[in-house]
Amino acid sequence: MSQKVLDLLQAKLGSGVVETHSQFGDDTAVIEPARWREAALFLRDDPRLAMNMFVDLCAVDYLAMNVEPRFEVVCHLRSLQHAHRVRIKARVGAEDGTEAELDSLVPVWRGADWFERETFDMMGIVFRGHPDLRRILMYPEFVGHPLRKDYPADKIQPLVEFREGTQGKLAPFGPDEGMSFGRQTHDYSRGEN
Amino acid sequence: MGELSKVESRTQVLEGSEHGFATTRVDALLNWAKKYSLFQFPFVTACCGMEFMALAGPRFDMARFGAEAPRFSPRQADLLWVVGTISQRQAPALRRIYEQMADPKWVLAFGTCASSGGFYDNYTTVAGIDKIIPCDIYVPGCPPRPEGVIDGILLLQDKIARGDRTPGIVKPRTDPATDEQALVTISKKPGGRR
Image (cartoon, rainbow over the protein chains, first blue to last red):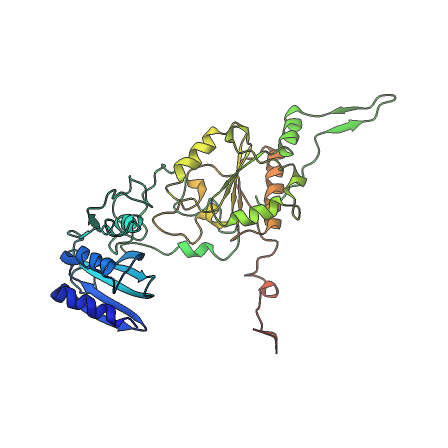
C-alpha cells in the first residue's frame, strides 16, 4: 500500500533500516536505535512522506523468547496529506532490562510526550531528551515497571496499609455466604509451589 | 447476615383512659431517625456509576428510602457509596474521605469491584475496599441491578435499627448455580434477524 514509504526510508538510511516487512497493507520498518530520531525527522520533513500525525507509541517485551535485544518500541505514524501510514520499530535493552534507552520523539512530534511517559512507566524504556520523563499512570512510590514480563503478576504495592484482619483477597464472608460460584476463583495456590 | 430481620418494635403505644402515651428507648428512636436520613457521599469511580444514576433517578427512586440527598462534602454525609473500581493510587483519597466523615457513618460497597476487586486481579487494583476502610454492606453484581442495591439499602437500614455493625452481603433471591430453572439460556429465535 505504501511500499513507497519503505523504499524512501531505505534509500535514505541504508543500513539504518534493519529489516522491513509489509503485511495486510501495514508496512513496518525496524530502525537502528542510534538512528531513531534521524528516521523520525526524515519521515516528518520529507515532502514525499510528510508524516505529520503521530498516532501511537508503545513497547513490547520479548523476555524468554530468545530474542536480543529484549524490548521493541513500536511507533505508528500517518500522513494526512498522502493518506499513508507506516509503523517503525526499534529494538533496545539487555536481557536484564537495563540499557533500554532510546532517543525521545518529543522534539519531532509534541504528541509523543505522554506516550513516551506511559511507555517509560509500564515498560521502563528511558527516552533520552524527553522534557519530563515521569510516571504517568502509576504513583511515584511504585517500584519497577508493571508490564515487564518479569514483574510478578500478583505483586501489589499498596499506598495505604491494609487494615488488620483482612484475609488476603477474600471478602470477610464464610463460604456459604454470597453466591455459591465465584468464590472458588481465588482459591488456587499462586506463586512458587 | 444478609437477610432482613423481623425487628420487634420497641415502641409501644399504650391506650390510656383519656390520654394515650408511648414508651420507647432513646437509642431505638435515634436509630429510627438515622436509618431514614442517610445523607450519601457518592464516591463514583467507574462504570457502576451508570447503575447508580439509574437508582437515583425516578424509576427506582432511592429517595423513597430516605437516602435521597447526595452531599458532596464528606463532612455532611452519613453513607459512603463506593461505586466502582478503586485503584491503589485512589486508596489514600478514599481513606481520607472516610476519615473526614463524621460519626455515625456507614460504607456501602457497590458492585463486585468495590467488594472484592472483581476480575482486576493485578498490580493496580485494591482487592476490595474493606482492605482499607471498614465496610457495612456489600452489593455484588457487575454492575448490581438497582433492585439489588435497594435490597442493600434495606439491609443497611435494618442493621442501623439493630445497631449491628457486622458486614452484610446482599444475597441473590435464588442462586442460579443451584437452580437449573433459573439459569439463563440463550436461544436464537428461528428466522429472526441477527
